[in-house]
Image (tube, rainbow, N blue to C red; front, top):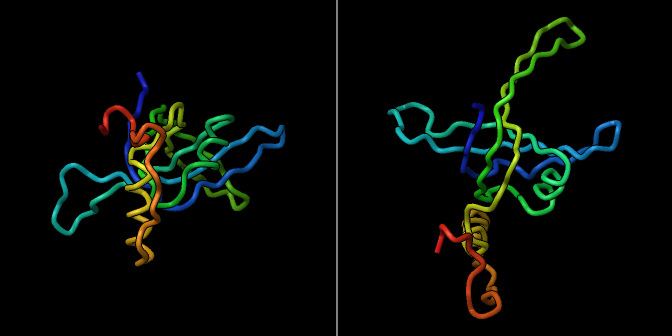
Length: 137
């Protein structure tokens, strides 16, 4: 079984492009914190993610740098040879499902701390309930 579940923050805005046959594909990188951090070692892994079709369009429209997201999908490896004959290898996660892993308020606070500006005031959702996924209530 090849299934990957990741929660992390986007390191940059997703990049949407289209194949020659007009199929949307979106690339982004997730910074995923390591559970056990070693002294003087890396504290996160940077995982390349590829989303296709409707998922790609969703990611490009709603995800942005710094946003905490959840991705489930499969791991794929591929190789290719460039024009100079150098062989390249890449391992990436092909996103099958994506979702927000933080609230809109958390994202605004995170963006504000990066920019040193106060977060924007947003009214609660209809009925006074925040739009949080069930696991974040």
